[in-house]
Length: 209
Figure 1: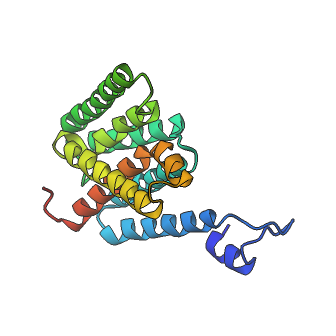
Figure 2: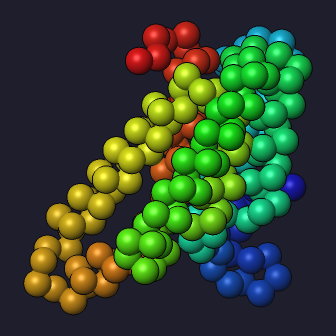
């Protein structure tokens, strides 16, 4: 029940069989703890703190799923949509108005669905997962129509930077490079990271471009 402490005491091994526990579990626990502390540090009314905590935990879980399995579970994308929609409806501080949230969610889903359809028509293959389209319902509702372009831009820059780093680590001419180039890009994780950055900018009261 105390993941970080138990991981250290058990030296990263299962209590019963002694098998090595994946290091990723420890990293996720550290990040989740840090997200909760950030939400508390941002302060505000209890409802705002709880909203921020749940938002960051959902974004972290979705990003982890996309990085690990290239999947964005429907249950999690639906939970994000309900959370951000309810926050806007009940005017939780740091969230857009209900109208802006609704338009942002519709714009996010509509634009990504159109992009997915157009790519498939032009290239004959899937270029954008349906999970990314569903994810945009919640992210668009949180960002609002005004900040939605910023979230997409930050996500694109993050994904591009990741791809460039991968290209540097695996120079052309190597078999690993061709495999890395053909591997699907977890764009959902980049979108979640961009939304978390937007929350941080809003919580810090910094001007948003």
